[in-house]
Image 1 (spheres, rainbow, N blue to C red):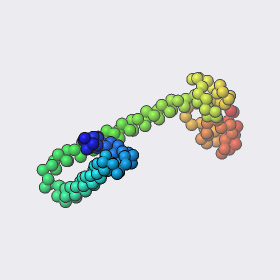
Image 2: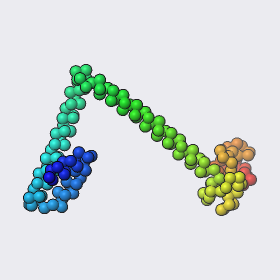
Image 3: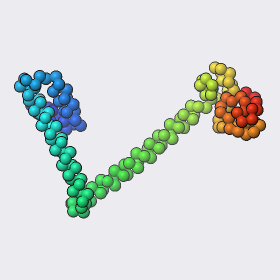
Image 4: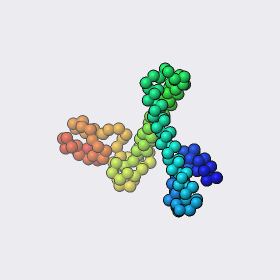
Length: 164
């Protein structure tokens, strides 16, 4: 019964291995249950090693002569489906990143560059600290045209007062 329990759980993504490892550290090895548990755990570990080695051997054999295997066309179809799924995932990731950037940009509208307070639309001065709120986009020096950081009162290039 213990074999069914841990063997069955082992097929569910390694849960049996996790539970077996916990139980193995808790159940004394000198009891009949402990001996059974340790033997089952050792057998499971060896079977996983065997499976990994056979997988490696199979990959090497396939790579030597792919056309020799009857499953080659099915494998190629699966690989095409993997590539399509990866492309879909890439597009979805880009769309999510764009949506996040748009949300961040929308959230930045009306946000004070000095204190971070979110001000209502149309307000020209921060309602928290009084800093002049600049229009969306880059601000440029009124004298020399250099790009200025939000909230800059004097140009770092020419020293002109920006009227803020």
